[in-house]
Length: 78
Image (cartoon, rainbow, N blue to C red; front, side, top):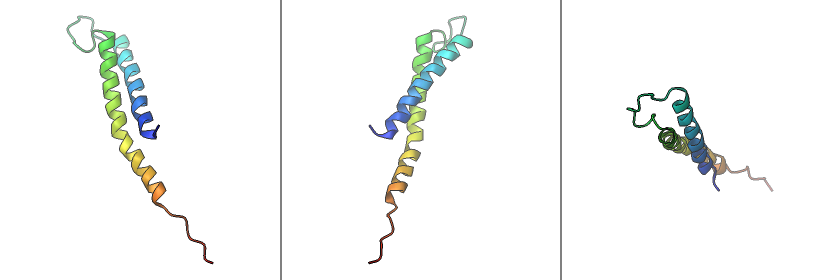
């Protein structure tokens, strides 16, 4: 697996936990809030946002990997 998938999966997990925490601590008592009134809606929305954020962070990590691999070691004189 490449490192980029770890960023996305980590974002999904952290987003889902964040969505659940938002529902638990803040939430919507009246039930009129479509996302935060039910715990699995809040968790799914958080997972979606976390996955998207993890995907945004991934290209910078890919660029860093490419920069590291593009440097060539100095050639030894004979």
